[in-house]
Length: 426
Image (cartoon, rainbow, N blue to C red; front, side, top):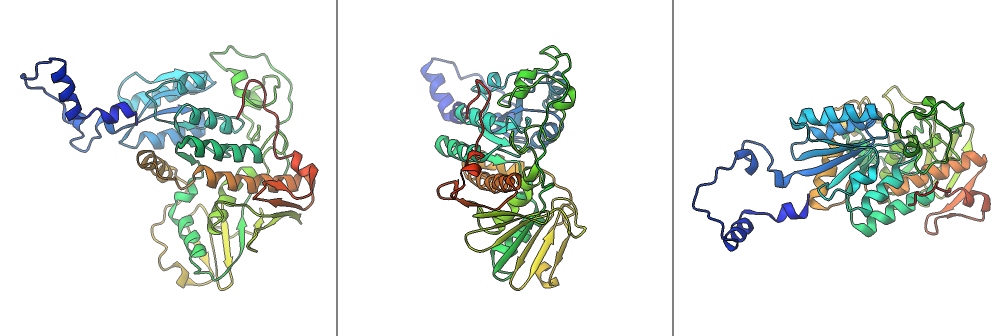
């Protein structure tokens, strides 16, 4: 929340008014809603939000924010005019006014000093750059995944949020869902015995490129700002197909897609199960259509597309010396023993972001670390990027998480970063 608003309490108001010679004898009628009565939240206690990138995913997550009583959205930003109009209508309906501002250039939104936090749900080519800009502008950030395009960006993202002391939440909302949290708890507390193997669904183990397609006439800027859409990505001519491409600059200019889509969810959950939010596996190797990795503590990570039980999308499986558990987006479980499921709790199928959004807003107020903070996101993404590099090179690579470099492998080390298009920087 804006610091000035937080400090404007009743005692300060009265003192200032008396010093200014303001007459206070006449009774002041203040609406109960302004004081937070009748279940409402006083304006001074509301978090002020700006939303950047409000296409399909962005509008969904924005809807989760708008359901929270202690939040008010005041601005939306998108390079597409149709997205801006839909999002403004969405916000104005909730706010019951027409005051939501719209922007094409996110820098104008970030320059507003009344905005406390931002939702970033742009294309993945923008995520790390936009989040860095927001942190430097003094905003807390909820950023959709994948959050980075390469290892260098992952490290830079963690560093900027550490240095600015801003709150960061990666959009890996499954960390906040009961079934995944329960399976992780069993793994972390020894209920499965000594942890041995973690299984993650990567959502594809390929090296899809964003590509270059036939150019089309570029529309007016108010309709589509193509230059801002590309942002830090390498320039290419406008085409509607590329603007809507699922793999456009998703996992880096080199390896677009690969482990980065589902991997930034499923590998992230395996990282937490192995208590590895501050490190990454040290070995990565393509094996018969899978990617096998190994942590320094000996735990194995298997990224595979096939062989999963029918428990929904984004499945994970944790195997220990005495037991195993598997779960997915259906919120159902399979386990080596029914006794492991006695305390499984509430079933919430699907993958709603509401709990994750609430965790972020609570941490904005308390300044605590979120469940998917920048350091946790950094290392989960490094694991995915390193896996993608092993897949691209089609051979085993070894990674040193302390030096953040591949061991004795110049070719792999060159793939840790990539150039950004001018004028964008991390």
